[in-house]
View 1 (tube, rainbow, N blue to C red):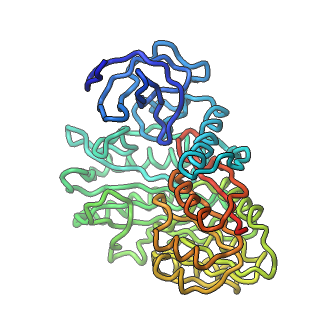
View 2 (view 1 turned 30 degrees about the vertical axis):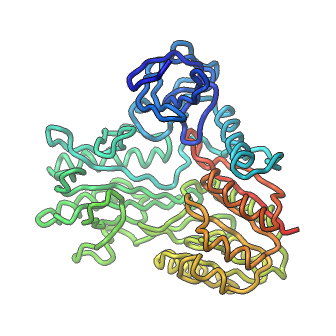
View 3 (view 1 turned 135 degrees about the horizontal axis):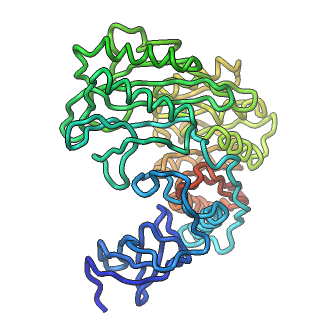
Length: 459
């Protein structure tokens, strides 16, 4: 049978792919079925036909997997967030661990990878310390505030309750939406790039109970200044636990909640409180501002960093290099166990945050360099052990060569993408390294995202 677009097939879902789609086969050809879970028998609508696979969607579940459960969120069917909330948590863990192992085998070329049991999340709901909610206009021009429809950048629905952050966050969203209605503030239109209200960002210190709220508008705010500030002040009066309440501006077309300017009538954009909050991991405090990068699951971040320490087996004589160090959290967290830490990070604002975090914690044996890893890694000199935490794309080829030339005895590689991790491990193993330990850590329950930590040693 020659498959065509719009064909409908009844298939048995056998596996889960990285990215969250169910995997089935039809006459030997792989069919990806969005919404399908292993154990389902589903009617799959074919959307794309490629030479080696087909892409489709599970339109109807004929016979559900015994591990399917009812999702707790009323928005599950339209939201693009927790795609596995309808799957038993133990099964989520099984497939995440399996995807790490399979990538190490098929991409990394390791016959029997030393994959240890996955580390489950301490909390499976209300675990995120940061959420970004989007404003948009419906077809009648009415303001919406919530999350994006799955698969659409230009469709937003009013959210009533998200189960990823906190009850306080949900209450803040409802309050701001009601205030925007009351004050007749127009929402930003994602396609037309017109309007005022763009994003609402809520950040929380899970170990400090501190809260930051950032109201992000577009650049067309003239005439609305007093009303925006009024919303902020009303928020601060309603929710007395807010430590930082900001108004920042994103006048660019890029649909991300990042600041490119601040309102002139407010110092540092502050409507109430200060321009930052603090989070704690173990004995270390980290300053978090509106645009700071910080692991979005504080509970599991501590588990992740403790795993790095366990794998690295640091000693007081170790000189450590921390590549892609971001705001310096891992380097600062391990600094008390080693002789010195050198962090490399491209984003200058992140390096400034890292320096501030080191100062806050009184860490003296750490320094940070603002540059591309691939530009400087070959000039850094010798280090005993290396920590790598690159973006999803993995290591730059030039950076990989520099690491090989550096030849540290131990590399601990932290990754959010098992396929690029496995690719880089294959290269390192060809140059004399051996994969000694590997584990997945579930940072994001009910999603397909996988965080991994591996240890490579030079024989």
